[in-house]
Image (cartoon, rainbow, N blue to C red):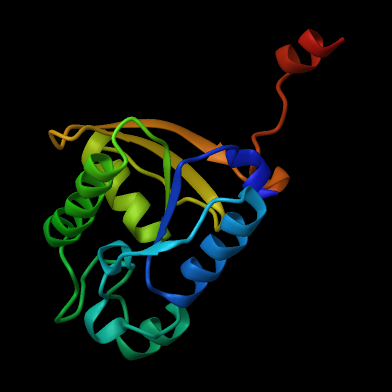
Length: 165
């Protein structure tokens, strides 16, 4: 379903983390675009001492920290995350100039990028997508979110239903 929602692209690049890479390979096979290029700069934020823990485990080991937005030692800052992801996206823009590239990454990366580009962000569901236009000069512009699964699509409004009739 995600591959169908994305349509034709020129290349697929993925985080080296297993879930993202697996997703990229499935999309690649269904779209007939490959091979999947791997880039470790697209990995999820390094959560320092929280790495590998669930939200519940963090709350037990670090009571109140998530609620107060306190982060542990080693937690990757937005600036560092955006620098490495930005470098990767600009390099992709240069390598595939004028083309459309799918970068399969992680929710925390997309959240930080949206926040940086618009000052606002909201969580993105698994298998959610966000178009980002990247110039070879490094300029970035946030495009639309793309619901890749029907369950993530916004519910039709009354005007949508009226237009279909």
